[in-house]
Image: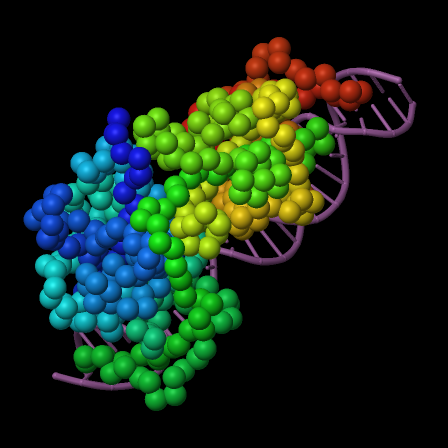
Length: 221
Length: 221
DNA sequence: TCAAAAGTGTTGATCCTACACCCATGA
DNA sequence: TCATGGGTGTAGGATCAACACTTTTGA
């Protein structure tokens, strides 16, 4: 057991995006300091009671400082705690889930204060520090549960999106393929997607252009 | 903002049971110490790093110390944190959900170290301290989500239970009524409830006795 | 005119709801 | 024998998965 009186309190973030081929990707950073220096880990950091007015603030600040991202929608997953998960002693981490809109992915690549990488969350090709492998599992599970529950991962897309893009996003999360007709019928019946951004037609490569949609905030998660 | 370096770290427990009339009830305790002395609140307490090897341990210890319950299955709901929820300063609480088997309810009544009460979680007739009203809401939501998701709140019942008791438990949680035939069909098809505890027939009041069932552990939650 | 992706319609299987019905018991 | 709650069968409606089909564009 530890002799310390207070635990370390921190926030970690599992930040997902879609890559160019619409595959689900997870952001990891290379740790600049001990412990686990040089290892890969989820972006995270210690609570600063004087700066943060909640753990969500901590997570937000961490994202700002480590990846240069602001105003990312966050969702709590769960707490990881114990006297053995961090060599510095008793620690408690609140894990947050975040989805990065397609149009902000380049911003991460630009910001170069820390080494960052996008990895496949299903089969990570790097070893993750601490219990961050479990965290990734938990975050994935939470994300999948939501999509399975008919929620739409709209935050993975740009504000203007096509139905096929939305379907690809759901498929990437659940790692399945879905029927186009059924997917669209479910959406249309649910009444809440605003139609046709009048001239917003995406002229993709060499095929028929697709209708663009915009969703009201309540459909985001 | 607070000047403290470390936050208070604690665990709170939303412990549910069914009363004699199969209604969902929530355990609250009267606070013996400041802050909020004399007010009602969820049972909770501070992390003791030297005794607890995880936050779940903290929750378990709290239940043991405050209500005299041991080995209650716990499930994490989520974290409540911030600099304004507790007058003592920056604080972080991990909320746990627990279901109390019918045959252990009397044990709580016996244990008299703290004043305890069972209240209706939907319309609490007492004012709860801190942000515990939000906690109750969150715990209820988590519980309902599970039952809606076809999970069985078996921990609310004795190990030997009748199908009607199980249905009443689900109904109490969701605050609805369900169709008997449909409920039973769903169960039977799911293959996993062991049948007939040979002589375990409950001879309720003045009607036909009901078949008793026992479930394998994987169906509990 | 062809490939590729957008977008729609149909059909059979499955699940769910509502309700009717029989069964076993205590009074 | 009647009231009460345990337990089952069925029919109609909603939902869903699978697949075939039409449309619109760039090359």
